[in-house]
Image 1 (cartoon, rainbow, N blue to C red):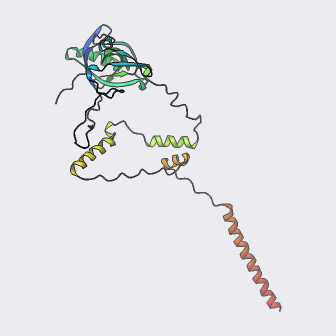
Image 2: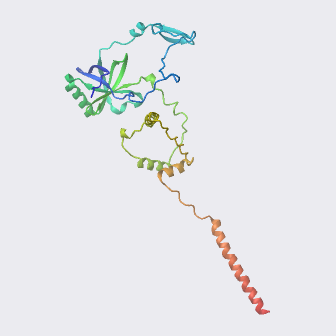
Image 3: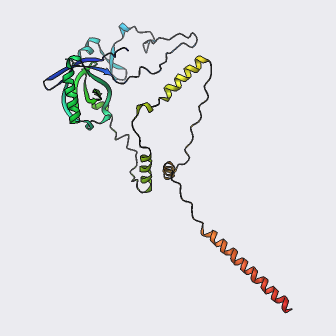
Length: 296
């Protein structure tokens, strides 16, 4: 098996202690099915070209330069050496600035995770840091230059090692205020809240990544296989429509609660009583008629 390639190598430093480490990608989309763009007529792959928006002529790589738009159609040109000069210098060191409770960082700031592994020469110091953080139940905030930018990294114990997650900058994280502005102010209580609790309890489970199902990836793989074998896939069935729009009834159905049958309406009992009165009147009429015949 080929060993994973390190994305970054350097040192992690806490206090006056430093040990060599490396970062390895913890999550990647490289195994996903990808497509190429083809010429439908020839079946050949097409190439991407950069063209001048006004003249329509192809612009070679040598003539391409970065620009920052200051007004509509007005740009400041930035030469490659000018851009390179803005990259912060790096000493290849993950400098731990503080240890904080693991729950203190809002995970909306999480960017990309990396496995932070030790070099063989620094295993003892690495283990000391890992075990100390586990015992104190803390995470570490560190800074270093990664991929041309000064990045803040959250380091946490992870199994036998450490995991380093780059954090989004504050200006990159949007406020949740606008996203939740339209939620009406209403208090949920009574039966509806109890039903919600019941549903949550019956759906209690454990986090298991093996249960994650990438249906799109599987469907595309099956489509490719079907094309190779010259067969067609069955048409997708339409998704069932919701049975009810009443929230309380939907909660009851989800919780398996059957609504009690309504009691017989008073009108039903009155009809029965009316039938009894009618029978009595009819009986009385028959008795009266018999008495009249005997008298005659």
